[in-house]
Length: 92
Image 1 (cartoon, helix red, strand yellow):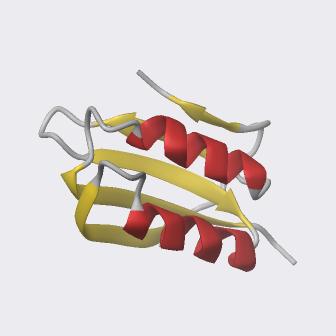
Image 2 (image 1 turned 120 degrees about the horizontal axis):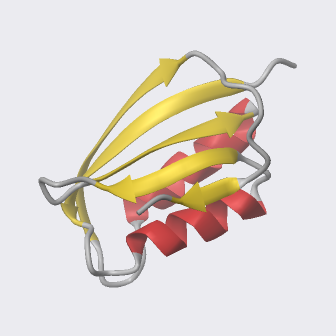
């Protein structure tokens, strides 16, 4: 099965609540590659690549967020897969 890649943007109380580290840990648990980072407008965005099941698990986690987060909305779209990534990381 070919890998799929998604772009996601999370709206709500998602900065300063450990959201990026939470996302990185879950994505690595699921064997995904990609990244997550804060945006200048107070959101969190990222890209994740892997199989359908793993991507669905990550999206479910991102919709929930860590304990102190309050997720209002998650935008997502499928994008072109990328080569050369070895793991999922937090970008600063």
